[in-house]
Image (tube, rainbow, N blue to C red):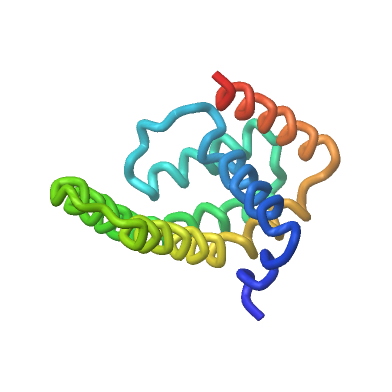
Length: 153
């Protein structure tokens, strides 16, 4: 039973949304510094920022680093897949004939990529979240509130 099966049923969208929110807050959207295009540099930056903003102890920093390392490991393949998807989309647009099947095929590839990354990141995310205390979770909640306000604008 993979992690994908855990997201089946009535609450799968809530779980997926929560996962996306945790990923976003888990350092990769912490300060809005999106100028780190190198996955390793971004992971290092995110670890430093999360450690400082959440006042992580050594054990929690190690748990967060597992998320960062999983992110780096999946990023190389993800960039290639994303470029492939954009190329396919471009080819469809240029051809001028787009069918529902074409769009569905691209959407399936995007979903598959999301599932692959989620499977790679989920164990580390769950472990990191379990290591946080109440104050740290509250800080993370406030960060999510800021992310939601940015999304609303």
